[in-house]
Image (cartoon, rainbow, N blue to C red; front, side, top):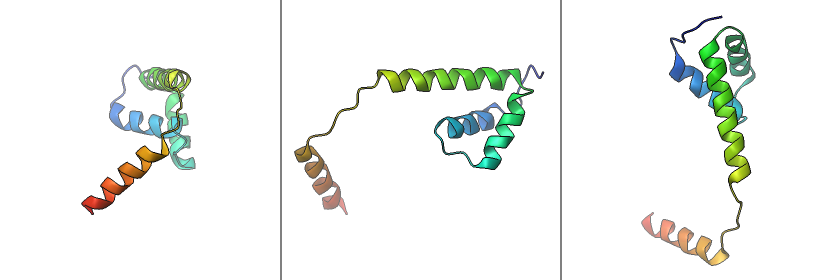
Length: 80
């Protein structure tokens, strides 16, 4: 088991893609293989997964008032 990861930033990007459900099968396979041998990546995966789960549970979903949506759209279109 590796104790040090030499490409943490790349691993983090891949882990985030996986947790967001946006990873390709190839990316998924690559990270899965890496998680079998890299302790820092295992820890990073677990932390990212826990944070995502916590945020998902804590965030309240609210509908935006229709008038606000229309105001924002009209302001965006006025800049075009």
